[in-house]
Length: 474
Image 1 (tube, rainbow, N blue to C red):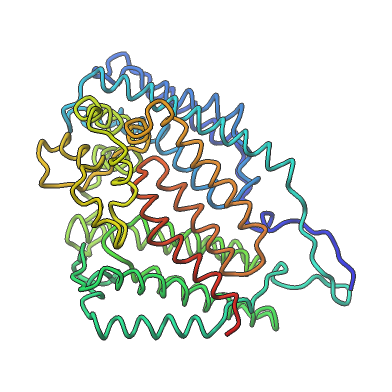
Image 2 (spheres, rainbow, N blue to C red):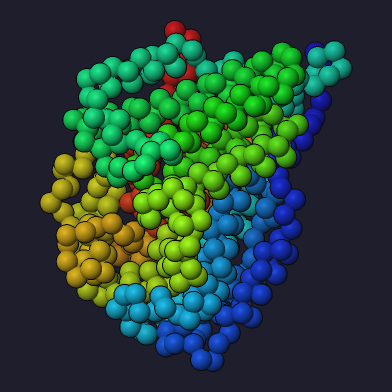
């Protein structure tokens, strides 16, 4: 059997998005946000898209050089530094008075956001240059003059015994702890429950892990059928499995729906590369529908989409973008929190932030104040609620001092390395896991460290253990 050098898997996924499009959007946003009449604290916000355009053009790697994780990271940058400032200006700076932050806090937030942007893009440039030096093309075997189908993937890598075992374990969990299902919602439910009443904290996690494993296994199964005999039904069934899986989600957060969806879309493109356009069109359209439906039911208690969307004006969207993607207002609030509680940060705070939402270990740090608590107390003036996310950059500075500005660089490097790993993997579960972690880190990189550490302990490590177990024949 001879071998033939072929393009890496990145070529099957890569979207032909020119960097100059992002640069143009940034320059347009800078022009639109120049406003001599801006309210105090926002006179200089045009610098955010301007610095984005300059540094992105000069240093950011091309989008096609990496995969889904880097694409999501680019989207986050675009939302934070270009789209949100424009929305804030269009909404006449109504967001300025949502919280009691001073002009000094807002100006410091702008400077800190520029520093974070520069560090992130320069880090991406540095790690891209390192990866280019070590990257190699993938060689695939050739049988009878034809390349192996499915881009050389191993579509029989997952041990069915593990999948059946996890499914059986989940059924046992549901029997012993039926309240665990209360932690999950279905998109067609009339009311979304935000918390579960499970007796055991691990119950919901086991069901969530099983959902992912079963979904990936079924995609692999249909991929193997496609490998034996090409039939578009294999693609349709795989996409149906993904849509059903996304429709059954934990809690009320839309973030995990988004993250899982992008990981599954990447996996589908790797397994069915000939149908990339169909996958992108159908899956992205379905994702938008699911996210809109979840949003209006959660926040407006209605299933009438037009009625729900009527409440989303530019001020509302600007507020949501600033909260979820850590805009200038939220960074300013983080700085204000450091002013109030900066002297409260100790080594114990670091352990608290890392273990706060971790099963079992969280009991050992329950009495220690966390960044999340201090941030929310600053926002609300009391500690009764703790539902807002502190920005990564101010949390990192509080925990690590000046070295905290390097934390965004760490996240960027992880995204790029995991993206590259996903393109080099040839087994389906390994591909999914690498891109799933990459998209998680990219999406949550602005805020906060606690969310990412929770994902590491509650999702990444368990799924990695299950991935290794899936390769074992027993």
